[in-house]
Length: 283
View (spheres, one colour):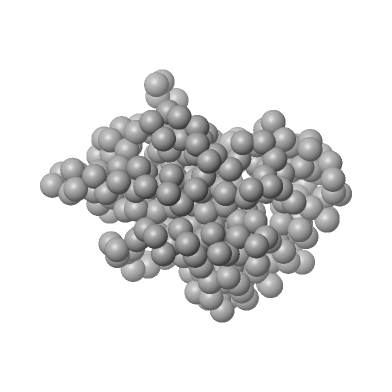
């Protein structure tokens, strides 16, 4: 696998990468061991694996799938067991080498998903649970193959309104430690709508942050916008500042790595946004 990103040891010590997709995610590459070895090379203190769990039965395409030993399977609670076992084996194997390995998941939100989320979280003892808003009305908003099908149904104002409606519902559920990559539509929406969308969140952000504060739901700082060519993180700086002013915790970095080369992407720059937060405790 070619090394396309900076692989030098981080200048900042003690960092964790809280958003990492191993090859159980349908769109990811790299085993648990490969990520752990790369984490040691980069000088991370720990990493949290957060394999996708997108289980909407009405989802368009193959979003509601996962990989197990290279085989594509439905994303079900029982099919997550090999992933959980692989991460726990990695935790044991790398503890002696000074790397803390956390078991997490990125749950894909859809209306009515709460019983499935509760069943998943009651079955496995996850250390950290992210929630991603990956689709609107059953069509993925973050897949290059489905941009037109998803975005063409709305004008930009309505699209953003719908996105934040779902994000607020996810926060209000109280099921998740953090919302992932808010607002993730910034990956593709500016290219589709052909306009500056960096301020479209303003009418909606206060209600979202109020929901996060009420349920103690954090926002992550997701650095994948750098490899997407956007030049900013998710959330953008104005949302980070608004969250902090409101009292919402924004204190954990996630690269959203989908291959080992992505690990800890731009973390030495992103640390300027960090405020001290307690480490995630092992379950």
